[in-house]
Image (cartoon, rainbow, N blue to C red; front, side, top):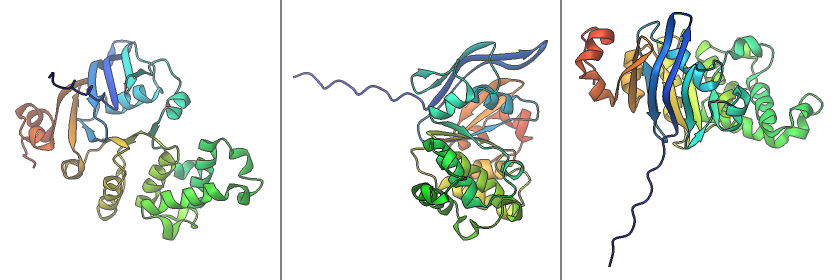
Length: 259
């Protein structure tokens, strides 16, 4: 009796193949090939100017690559526009304190939910027409610890809460992959732990790739770490592997050991 056929390997949630981008003679992404497994909590680190935000901009469609491919699962999304990638389940955070300063958290997330459902035009006419959307928005805010302050104007929230609200707005699009560019940037240390604790509590159905400079947060919360230097991938691995990598310590961690 023959052995049963092995199940096909699950594709990465997100991957790039030979991704390159230049601005004149300045190479900002040089043949980047990486993969982010399903359900991962991957950190993207590297010194200033390494190309981390450029890579996120390429993945989200804000920049067009000169060469290479971007895949969600098995689907090539390289030619898709940013809003089409959002519809495919790719979301990133953005600065809500500029966009929604006069709305409260519940209104802002409800608007995002209505937009995802294609009923945003009803939001300003009658909030009662979006009762289900309000309930969904409240649940998203509750999952991030924002329910108690959901009726306060955005501009009155603590900065750490504003960063969580950015994440809530991204979650309202029902992403399969969430990209976060320094979610704790500018957040007081006592609040940054709360931001990452909320991220750690997200469903494993959501894959997370985040840029972060605070190595204590990275080594505490990341399941894998991708290290960029000068527009290339220097190393990928678990926090233990990256912490022990002599190349990484030399160019970025300053000889310090983590883990």
